[in-house]
Image 1: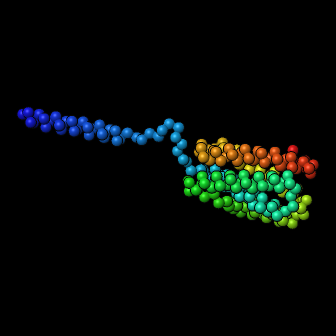
Image 2 (image 1 turned 90 degrees about the vertical axis):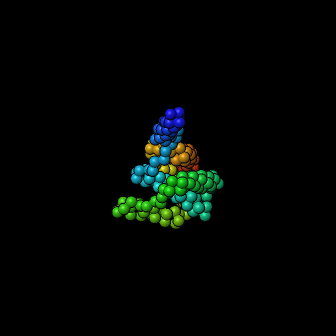
Image 3 (image 1 turned 60 degrees about the vertical axis):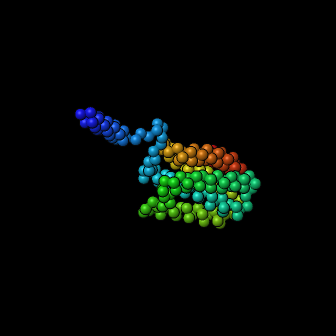
Length: 198
């Protein structure tokens, strides 16, 4: 009887341990409070990010072209700064995209809209290539002012729609640089008494 009672006690203990273990394992895993869970960008958000990536790349390309033109020292200094900061921003965004396997390759919209945008870009590029030094500097500054202002709109839109800490860090840096670029370009355009620099 004593042996049977001991066996019954052991079986009961094993059943209780098994029930406890099962209950523990069935509890859902809780994420630590405040931990960000990555969410892939929506199609609209991805389109904005591709615009930003293209903007970073286009500005470094423009800076390379401007290096072969005769620029005044103050404009050359801006051009060098723009090249450095846009490359850094482009690298930062690319690193984030690579970590999450996101393709930031820009494609022009389909149909006539995309063809029109591509034609405008080609026309601007051709104009800059054929400008004389004085015209190039003025046109370069004006185009960059419009481009940075356009970029700022995309940055603001992206900031309002993301909780991703790494992406937000990129966007906040981009917003700060874009604001500084706008101010510097306005001052540089003052020499041309250009109303659009207001």
